[in-house]
Image (tube, rainbow, N blue to C red):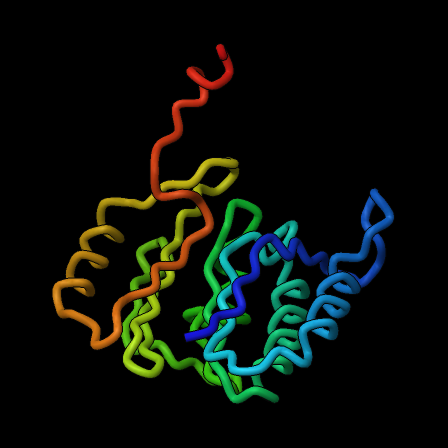
Length: 181
């Protein structure tokens, strides 16, 4: 299975350059254009910080650009949140975050309380997106209810395994030890 994995697109509500003179939208367009000849992809996975400030317009741009890329290849797109994202705007534009090549929601199961997690299967491989967003914070966290939902999802084996997609690393990092070294 071949997956195009993207993260930290940080799209803004407009196509204008940011304070550093960079247009995240133009950068994403350029990258997707450079990858236009990539063959044999089975899915696109975007793991968080899709929008820089959680604007609906940013999610709409992402859906349009990555959706067009996926539609030409007839492959699904799986998105999840990061610390810059905003759950309501994400859901308004991307639904569960699991989109079929035609842009329709394809999630087989989802969790929405308040984290947004979903599951879909592609060619026998299960894709699970988890929501590690902690509003207003840089760090991430997987809540107890979401982990219980995940435990239930994983109880049944997937024919070809499971891909877990989330923005933040699923381990605690002891930064104090590395900062002292």
